[in-house]
Image (cartoon, rainbow, N blue to C red; front, side, top):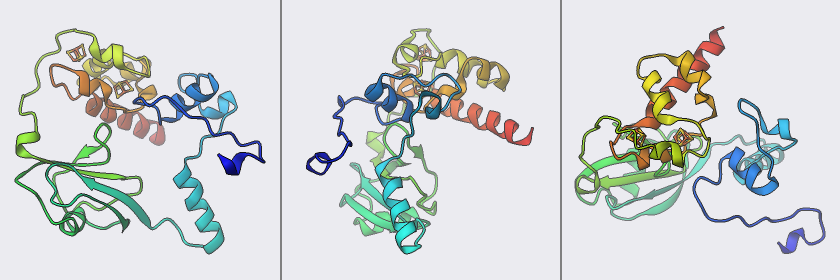
Length: 224
Ligand code: SF4
Ligand code: SF4
């Protein structure tokens, strides 16, 4: 804040809540402007750059070095010595876990990314990718073993959705490859925050189906 005193830069503290860091949520929280469905921040006169991107651009311009490293937080009850590591992009996950003293207990789930938006991994040979800021290791006893059940129409996924779309309805169509209908229902506005999956009492992996539908729509658009 001291560095901003003599400039027109302002530091804006925000309420701690999730999701808050996604582009559209940040713009709304700071400026009150709402990016329209299917629109971009520039439609409301805003450009969003995260600190890491700005720093990487600075390094690239000053030294010519492209982005080759990623800071990864290796944590969770299933790793012996949690650490923050700066690693080369492409390093297999196995090396990170070994560097952190290995597993503590029998691993039950390994998630690359954050607890809400990360994806479960089936192999430790998977490489660290750009943007993978976390590696979470859970033991078998930490993982909820309940299987997926039917939708009970409780509406919780709808109430928590920050994009104000209908996750349960979209997924009902996405499951049957009705991606045009899913698009009409606003699936592309989903920010993949994972709140719907987290809140669903029937353990339905809503965001996973939504991700697949978004991928299929984008692939169609690219090939059109
Ligand atoms: S992940 Fe679920 S809750 Fe989050 S924006 Fe997408 S549909 Fe809404
Ligand atoms: S939270 Fe789960 S059970 Fe409830 S309406 Fe949504 S999908 Fe159905």
